[in-house]
Length: 137
Image (cartoon, one colour):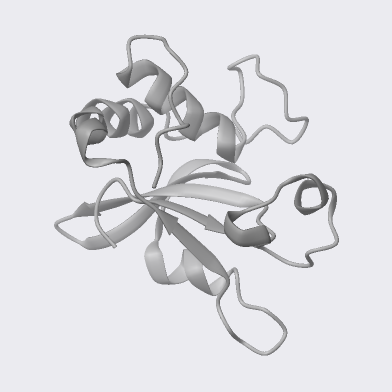
């Protein structure tokens, strides 16, 4: 993992409302997303997770995704090389969203944020207001 990697996970049962309508790579079920950030203290995941937008230790983030057998369920995506230049502005924007409440109603009103809304907003900001996330590999 490296800074800017997008990490998709499955938290809890794959039979929840978000997992039912979200298909990950090769049909994998996912229901949560964050972005990897490395700082002097190690690797963290910037995420919108109740009760707010926050940095979570990478190990804590991955441990939340374990299946009933104890195996972690996650997928790492990375921006194509030609778009890597967007990462510093996207991450800077995302870090400024820390402490914004988690959006339990999944609205896009910016008063609160849910996980994928945070990631989309980060790259939209870094890409001068244009939707961006089709450029993963």
